Image (cartoon, rainbow, N blue to C red):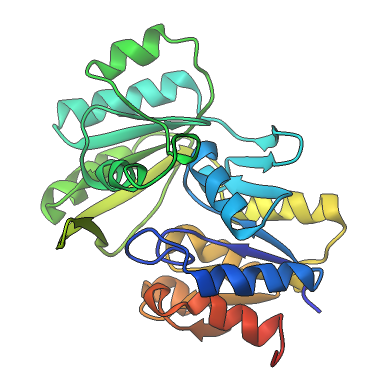
Length: 293
């Protein structure tokens, strides 16, 4: 019997509109009632995950920042962390600004962004539909380098870099990879999300990568958590769709990917479920945790 399920958010539990469907919530709650621990394992910051965890009835732990943080929901505290040093953050910001490429800095609670573009624009549009206490905290900062240099904030979990030109994006990635002691995600496909504006559907498409402290990964965080919970890795299900889910999918007892996921993770999965827009998470949990109920 599986005892813990770790589920990614964007492209996995959430559909293209950033929503957890009612059926998916129902199946997740049924899984929890069966005695299985369901946790979110996402690249998002703490406040962005909290509301979704509450929505699905997951009330113990979640993983944020691609494994930089494990958060205890009941105690409202971080119980595991691997933050980026401020000097490393400043080095990457300087590189991005010299090359005129879009970037965002994620702290444990806030997304710092020079402009509302790409993934941050998507989170902003999500916020318009949410109650105040459920919004992703976004702070628009014009002079990011000075702001961070002078800030007392030390809890940096990752930096995302985005561009709609593959040529420009690949160029900056080569430069970023020359920086020591960081993890750079090799995201091989374009991110596609949809924003609803009235009756109109507006696609947001961009190439992106995420940079974090060395040895930050969702699986390493899961290993720490299952040791604490006295759970064997063979009793873990991991569900995801992208390169930042690869280690947890290949190391969990049962690694599940969404249909149409990046080939890198599809190759290491033991099961392929439906897409995020076809409630693939609900399908997988129904099959492996809830039986034929």
